[in-house]
Image (tube, rainbow, N blue to C red; front, top):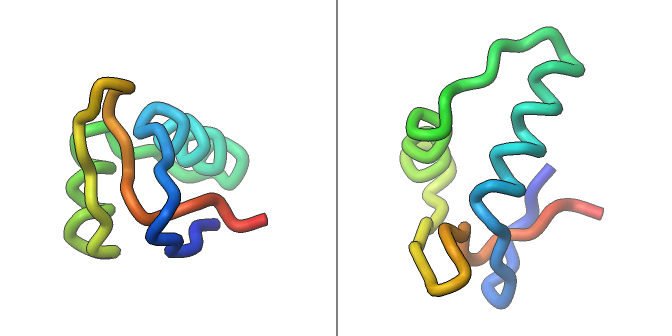
Length: 64
């Protein structure tokens, strides 16, 4: 689903929406946004930042 890419950023809202849709399609219950953020930081060591453009995940991209 995700690949590390040090030059890429993904909107936190887009990432969460993608995750929520995946959960719904696979019969899983989605975490709320706060728990999802903590899981990505703690489990996958991803970096989250608030920027002028909004909240973003740094250094990742969706797998093509």
